[in-house]
Length: 247
Image 1 (cartoon, rainbow, N blue to C red):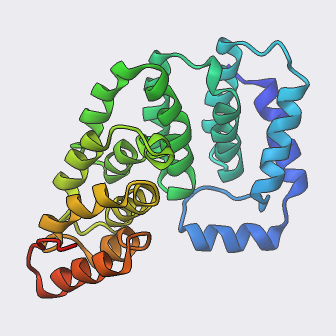
Image 2 (tube, rainbow, N blue to C red; image 1 turned 180 degrees about the horizontal axis):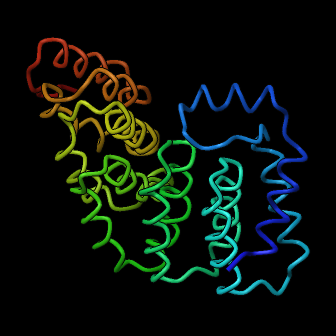
């Protein structure tokens, strides 16, 4: 059924866009979606204003509007759906992971996937730990965006200095030798952000695996590590051999 709210949000987004930006963004993201040429700050402001006018927004309305926005083949409408779910994540329930998965499977670009995975599914998984079984399934999915999302859903608590590094490590170990850039980048990104608070944990995980890691992964992962540790790991990577760390 058509959603008047989704239609109103789309009109507002289109009014804020420019044709020049639409062409540039479409080329940059290599997406088949239509682009209105609206910048992310304007998308966020539009969603924030819509939410402010609906103080009584409930779960069912949230999911209906987000789903209706996603079903419009316009990048900014889909971005608004992601921003809406992020802004109202406290209303979501464990069963909404089905909607998130549908969105991830049809996103087709990191610009939509990453917010859905790290912020929406990540928040859901923290509130409903049973959803780790969904992440386990995603981690071996044929769709590399789902595999990337399984890891990114664990990012925010790892960034804070806690979180389930053991689970992330299992996922990353399975994907470490993959050729897909977005998988390699995600592994390095999460290791980098984890390493800012727990450098020893990251260094010890990497040391026996550097011979299997990609350059993209290694360049990101070692950034926050102490210089002497970083040098040992990079030397092992260049020589394609596991590393025994020395203090």
